Picture 1 (cartoon, helix red, strand yellow):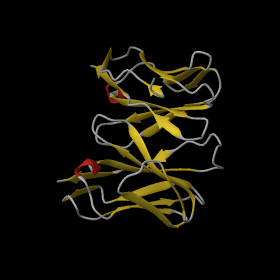
Picture 2 (picture 1 turned 30 degrees about the horizontal axis):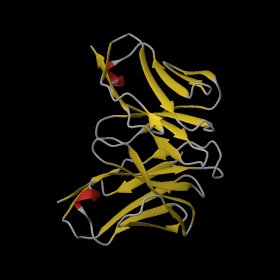
Picture 3 (picture 1 turned 60 degrees about the vertical axis):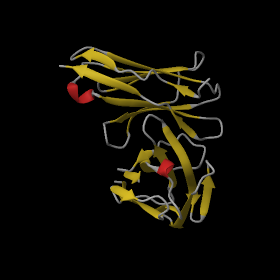
Amino acid sequence: SQTIHQWPATLVQPVGSPLSLECTVEGTSNPNLYWYRQAAGRGLQLLFYSVGIGQISSEVPQNLSASRPQDRQFILSSKKLLLSDSGFYLCAWSVGPWGSYNEQFFGPGTRLTVL
Amino acid sequence: QKEVEQNSGPLSVPEGAIASLNCTYSDRVSQSFFWYRQYSGKSPELIMSIYSNGDKEDGRFTAQLNKASQYVSLLIRDSQPSDSATYLCAVRRRDDKIIFGKGTRLHILP
């Protein structure tokens, strides 16, 4: 069965510090991968998605970036965190061709607090 | 008009009763619809997906879709305290992106 891991589970970082969040998927090949952010009182916001190694699409211009160095690894980064970057960061995966009726499954998430 | 709209709640339902959660969407071309359950502090968990008009049942859950009215709902029969959570409606747009509503908080009263 498929499993998705995220780490760390929680993170407290000062403003201006760098960020690296990692997501890995097991039990499937060539998944579509997604990064979402859920801020307090707001819905899930899609940040990035990837349909393959090295292929990244950005949804929202901001100080975050994403990379996919391996088929089942997705990394979210920032060079300098802002207060507004605080939130619950969720990695998700789906399988099947982009545009199919594929369902998305979420990892456990990383709760980031920027002070 | 928001792309996916849900009443934020809280919706309070007595234990054993039917909980009815509603969602409307703006993109008429949308073809795929999903319901997620999210417990406080946890990540969303997919509980139902529906693609065709009508009802789809899975255990105590029934998803209902009416594309003409751009309306999707989730019914939970025999509500249990463990059903207390936030329920997110999600819709796949014509560009294949999935858009989430802000969720409805459901509280089952023991």
